[in-house]
Image 1 (spheres, rainbow, N blue to C red):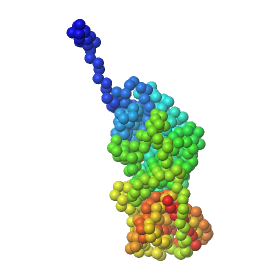
Image 2: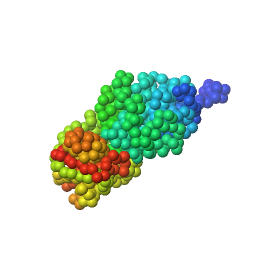
Image 3: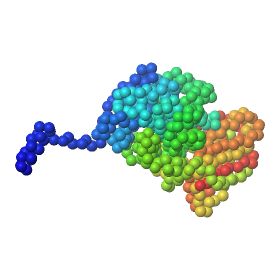
Image 4: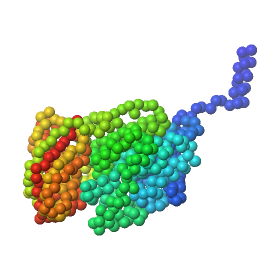
Length: 497
């Protein structure tokens, strides 16, 4: 009887076939043409999960950075598809590389493309339209935030090395960030097709009329869309670098403070796109790890505990572990009084803010700061003030502020304020800086100036020093040689953790 039963089982097994092996979770990649706004073709890598059922799957849309093609996120996309079951669409932004259209600087068509990609993925890639996230680096980050304001289907956004206020980023305190603008223009021409808005903006810049470009900023800045983002309840994660030479951290910190939905802010050493660069390629990276957890929580709905963590996570710019806060730090502060003095304008000094992309990368990867030798600063063309020593060291955390009394002799003068940590020999490391445009010949005025925020560990026995001069290679200066600037009694306030 037993042999008969075995024979029957063998026969059934032969007739019906052996049970199929369960496929291990994986991913498949296809190269697609997706119709954007107006039918413009957008070239995309579409990464879908395999061995995880037939879907529908949660969807992540990743617009590419400025001048970078769609391969930018494929490594991260493959990891997200395989390990977490997302459909991920990494596409080249309109106007660049093999996508159609023209560059409109995150205008309505570029932002609308995000929604068109969502539509396509739902119809063609087994994507779940009720579980959608958008993310990107730089240009892709700005698009993601703007799209989140326009499209309620986007439940969560992750914006890395992003701008939230375009004018404030490229025209801080009415001073053109020359190296940043030149870099963006050169990259746009080399890899894309500038549209009318970009062409007109470049013409104005070349003619010294950059102020005419400012009106296009609001519609292309998430800061002006904060009410829509809050109304949509979008969960927003932002990750930027302290030394970002294109989009400095002050604008994102202020934007973060106005968000009312789920939010997370991570600021760490580095320059534009350097902190998250390797993560986009699928390599281990703490920023992209947080991005994945953010989407798991707010797109998939997985209770992974990220919402219970301190939302403001700041890594000191000169090394150290993450410092975590419930809100933007606003603790104790030291105030240093600055005496009056007079300098001649229009001359450069050994104090400057470094080179876009290079200086911040050196700080982030090798902890090599932008340095200065205080004894070599010409006091006739720069003001130099030293603060007290910190015998046991200190941690700066937040936004240093200047209350500056100034009287320029020329109608327009550009000031550059640099805050340094200085050792016993007068050698300093740049902590933060900010340009300041002053107008009104002969008029004494008191200016409230916020330097860029920072977290910085001051070494034992070192002190802080403030330097103000009137020229910096990173920016366009409007200072006139032969003019003067007189500083009256002023103060510097430095927040501490």
